[in-house]
Image (cartoon, rainbow, N blue to C red; front, side):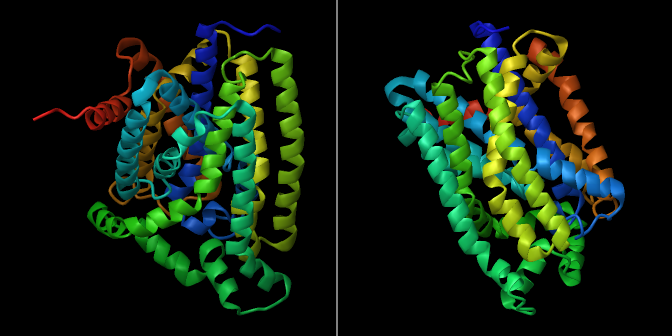
Length: 402
């Protein structure tokens, strides 16, 4: 229990951690499929205000929202670093080919299914990874913290005007009206979003295809935060934590310290939102900026706990590990399942469920991942989209000569 574990156990734990990350992402992604976008952050925007809806919001805000996305980004950085270290002198070419293919997959995914797709952000942030790959563990951690500071600073500049207007009582200010459309209860905006959410597949593809440049601008705004998480994962790998080189007690201590930093801060932010009545001018900065350091700290706690306790080949660990080995396929197939529930060409439940009902329906893709991943890994191994990503990257890296 106190010694570092063997290489086979190490990769079991790392894959299981990746499985936890892709499962945890569903807890928030389901809201993007089920409800108008302001409700993703603001429980009063749409989707009911019953006690179950409130508790789902509170639990999601504290334990899920952006924690598992951060964890997923950390493990993305680890995977890229492993491949770069193995690739030798030509690793940079293969890496950029992988990022190009991942960006293409992300754009298709965002156009057909999930407008909040994270693959585009990872692919763009991944372009900087070869510049970081030679840094030490301490330097990578320093880069991660520096980028986190940049994210908070830029975020407060971008979202500070509505907050200032709200705090100074400038009702009707343009910044407040903008915030209300993005994070509040503006009725015309909600009506428009409900109409968009119930459009057909052809209409969606046409609208989102035209919006790809605007999508990429929005994605670019998240690059400091995503690159911070990626650099953190790389630093934890190079420092030995995600390699399984830390003893259990050290991992537990790390998890405890990170949780003690994260949980009080998140609770105070949640209380601030509740006491002020979830004003749009405050919801945006809290959800996107002020919570970011605490989100990253709690993601770190999750990673340390997983490495401490998921190092034995139990049935649960094997199921999580198989889910993690198919993380790209599972991430994409989750969108297919959620679209079958909420899209117009499926059951058409978009806008017809409350927050807690949407969260409950999100358990369906989680169950599907845990059920299908172990037999697929045992019989076939690599997932279909992992294979597509690898094949496409290889074709770009080593094109056939005429």
